[in-house]
Length: 409
Image 1 (cartoon, rainbow, N blue to C red):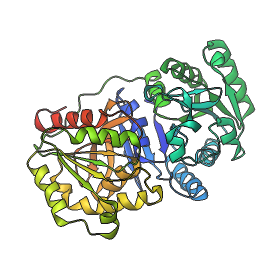
Image 2 (cartoon, rainbow, N blue to C red):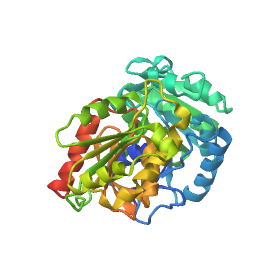
Image 3 (tube, rainbow, N blue to C red):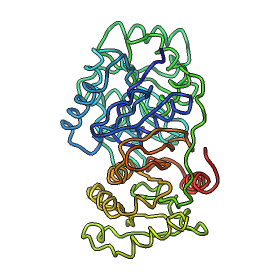
């Protein structure tokens, strides 16, 4: 019988970028949220608990309820976390530990493909400490990026396994076996390369049901590669000839840089919207009319929430909800959708009547492509706001454009 997985995430893009690791290697992988349950055919079910912006106690309760409902039938558990440690990782891990009856937690947040690594039990971004980056200054949940100290805030016991242990097959196997025998432990695994993550996956999988996983898409790829299945029949989208709607709601600088480059593309219609117009409900009808006309003509349309140099993060959820409500009448005109930022993607898809995503391929690291389920059946690409470079949105738009205009995947 094919092994099944539950991926429990705190936002939608995270659920997708982990599940796509399994979909790309032949497993039927579905993303869901709200009251969704795993479809019978899903070997991998990634559930968005939408807990990152909640109070800590509420986030923990939401994870507890999701685990009670979804962690069954022998599924392995992957607790997806943000690679830059946003959200309530420690308290949510407490719930995962309880749900797995104190199995050993394998904690490896590195995602080398996006230049997030772990050394000496601390997170680095592009080689510099996470605490010194713009990402940390903009949004962080803990006073330090030391993983053992972070776990200790919720009473968890973390044991650091340095690179010297990770890169010695015998030492790694013994260390994990010893920690598994103690119970109630989290193994904090250093990793700088995909090969390091592959070693962690191979060694931990030999422990069977005695482990669960805490990490980002880097670890998901390593686990999926360690347990491959035959490739399924190629997936086919239905080309409609309509345009792609690209929505940038993330405040991350990487997404803003990418939007600026995409806006210069020939034939693309760029329609920025001011935060005040969204919050007051005064966005002009012509704004929506322009989106619909562009999509119906087969043009790509870029919608961006315009922000200043120091955006107010506290109003971010209100902005994306208001934008999703504004765009809802355009849903039936969309040939394909791309969204940056988990909150943005979740708000749009929910408003459009989408109940889940059947994942198909990874466009680039951290960018998942799938088919929407529910009221719409269109190609959907999701990307975490801080992932990618200045050309990411252009590459995503090009992939979706090819699907709509030329091909069936």
